[in-house]
Image (tube, rainbow, N blue to C red; front, side):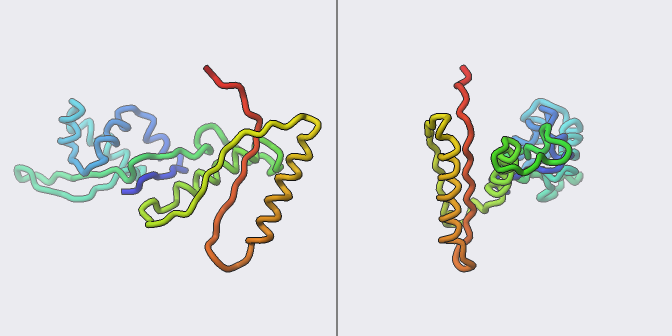
Length: 185
C-alpha cells in the first residue's frame, strides 16, 4: 500500500465524491471483506460491495485475496493508498493551460501542481530522501520589487549553472514567490 496516491483521472475523483465511498475506503486501510466493512459501518454487505466495486473500477481498491466462508467465496479488499491527493487539474482547471509567463499566478499554480505530483511519486519507504523545505516572508518596497525578483532569478540561475552538470544525484528546485494575503479568521 502506498502512503500517498496522486489522482489525475476524472473517474478516480468522481469515485471519491460519495461520502459512503470515503468511509468504505477508510475501512479498507487494512484488508477486509465487504461483510466486515458492512458490519463496521452498519450497512448491508450488498451496499458496501456496490461501493467497493466502483472503487476497484477506479483503481483505488484492489482485491488482495479470497476466502471461503460457509462454502461461499468472499473477496478481501484493500485500499491502494493511505491518503489521496487530487490534482488541481481535476478541481476546476479545465481547458488549455494559461501561458507559461513566469510572473503569472497561472504559472505558479502549474508549478505547484508539478511539485505536488513529484512529491506524491517519491518512494517514502526509501531509506534516505534528501530534501529540504524552506519558507519565509520577505518585505519589499514596491519600487524595489523588480530588483528583488531579478536578484532571486539571477541567484537561482547561478545555482543551476554551478550545479547543473550531468553527473550526481538530480534534484528539482522550485521557488514560489507570491503576495502574502491577509490571514483569514
